[in-house]
Image (tube, rainbow, N blue to C red; front, side, top):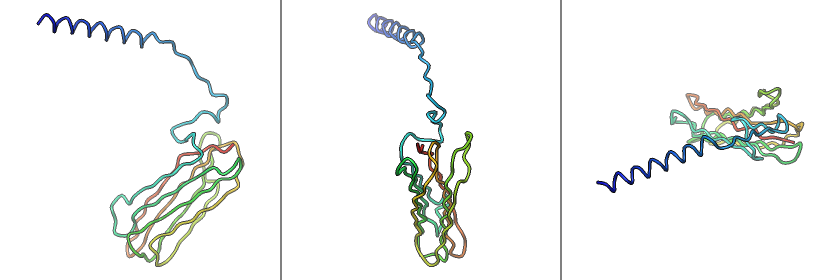
Length: 162
């Protein structure tokens, strides 16, 4: 019994000392050298971003959609997208929207719309020359129509092109 009390006391003293050390630690502010260095939840520090979404309803037609964006150089990116179906569908849709961050918010910079008939999947890849010094991301719309139309959307994180 005495040994248990002693261990509780030692544990309590250790916890108190640890909490004191954490609360008195010096806080060093970090400043970004420019607004481009401030990475938000919408961006990544990587040169590549990807997103995949499966059909939310586990539909009969649409399986998943995928989009990617990758930095190729200081003024060129590669974007790609895939719409994958469970079977041959009457019409398969893949819309790719390249979004650019301007004044702190994203807006459509360029877009492409692709459709194919009587296929199980549709994929496209595009290299795009872009102005450097900002973030770019890709938004995708994926749909499959075979009687009923099922769709999903995708959105990558932004990557910095500088």
